[in-house]
Image (cartoon, rainbow, N blue to C red; front, side, top):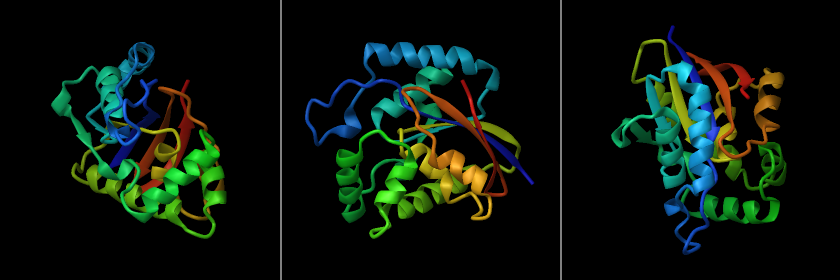
Length: 195
């Protein structure tokens, strides 16, 4: 039974997109680089075995800066970013309506369409698939986005574990903020906030 300690977080401050359709290509601002460097100094003790991120450049840059690893050490997980197609359009519309709010606001707003639950299931399955590639206990870093990162773990929490679910649903990540998730056999057993 492998224990996976995941330090998950939101990307640091990013420059605005030069073109609205190029959200994936946004890079860290100088403020974001400083935030990621500070977060990295605070997390150096973790000695990450593997690093994952959303495919968004700002998330990859945050992962690289925080962990101090080379570019090819970060594995991108496409499911950690806005999906393409109808669900992506619904999620984008919700984001422009709701803004940066905790995931619970998105779940509550999405009662009819279910796109956020589908996102959580797809992202959670992708994370479990990546973690299952190693049978060893390990500490990994995952960097993504304000709402998507906590939601990525929601489908991995048993329905009866309301305290753990509430922690993820009420998490309002600021720039470069992180939290810890412990996963055993594909199930979240702990959620802890890190300063």
